[in-house]
Image (cartoon, rainbow, N blue to C red; front, side, top):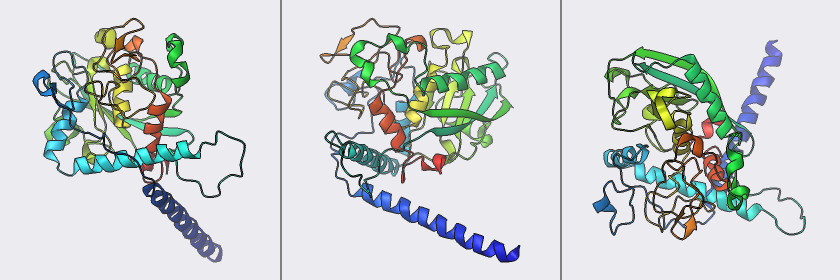
Length: 359
């Protein structure tokens, strides 16, 4: 047995070394692809006055349901290196998408390239989920809420949302099956008497009465609690600190819940996981010329609410109001686009910010 073990150990080390060299080569190939980064931005303004005449223009007020961009602004102020890391992630994302476009052969079949440029991750992605619940007796979270939330995520990220048939014809070819599966890996519960946790990430630290994250390199952590301030949820974009990486959802908006009203059908989590996977709001958090970095989403200069009729026109184009990254009611959002899918999948490619989930 000992004689057999040593050769197997050597073989294992050799294969691991080969895989690392292959990944390193892919990262180097990606770094060699030139892309335009002139439109990249991270900060968004937080008042109407600030949005006048400046590049960014999302207003965080009573109508703001998602706290992700406001939290990002604060994190950028607190951490001088975050903007640089997000720039690098964005550049890597654009390089992979550019390579995918270049590798697509639209003419006659040709001999396959033995060493093609890297592209956004291909194949099924499975994301284990940890649900951290700060229990408030007035806003209970049952196993049924948890199970329904996992089911809803799997519907939305696999083009199984029952309302997708309502997508207008002009957007039909843009509908993406993201092929991302979410699996419940654990539930942590802790009693809490706090009526409002806010958006300063206190719920993510046991030392502040919250629950510490479970290995964010391998698990998507949800924190479910009373956020307050009219915020339904918020997420941390790729590039932030590991100990705070994940998604926060208000207790009444996690899974199917009658307490959530129009936002009680689990789509807050879909929207916030989109941010966690590097998607911006579909209107780009600004005016018509500020983009969400996705080519197949139309330009817009504002969020939509309620259940808008089609067409809803802003910036001389029809808004894709049914996109998960808008602010419409839960039952009125039911699609991601192929371009958004490419952005998300770029994170799982070699050198990507969430590569650990597929290794």
